[in-house]
Image (cartoon, rainbow, N blue to C red; front, side):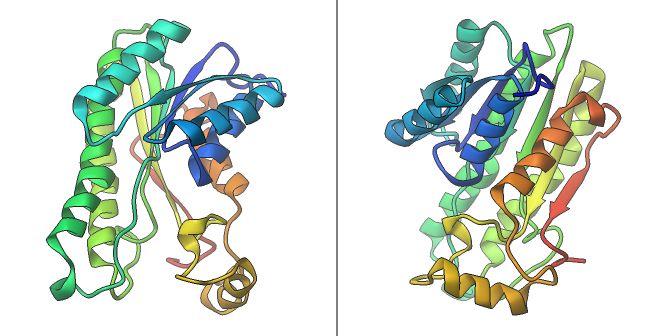
Length: 254
């Protein structure tokens, strides 16, 4: 374990699986105390167990980011538990789509906006409110997507809109709060080795064949590769990086 994030507390939302879990594990491996948040206690507990087995420190906090009171409570509880909030990664998100705009249900639209965009807004408000009271400030990384501000696909307009808005919100919030000592950036992954990049009924092997043709890199990104980008933006190595949106998509939107 390295010590790049030693003595720092990191909050990761949507940390019960996939990229969120990989990010939480990566921070713990570099010395951070990690607070993992999400809607499902059982999967969060699995993440905490994995971190503990690797010699790290973590605790789980159950919350739905679309509920502003819930995420404010999580931030307060994290600070009570660990003494600070130094880094936050707003990863919680959902996917709805596969239909053109005219066929998109209002329910799916509302879910996308409520979780993917309003959830990030709620989290930012709670995180910044605390971080700007700390002498050391803090760093926030929002997880957007290469679908949105960087590229579009048929049938995914609503999802792309929610994630493009995260990119815009990130840049605006970064300008609003850098003078408060809070540094805000985004990572926009393309297809990553998680269940979200699988088509309905598709196996990992079938996805690999598809990605050889669909991706300039010829494969999906690993969760470790995407997590490395998050840790860079959260680290002192990126001290002058403010309001950027780092695309990790194997050249898909180049």
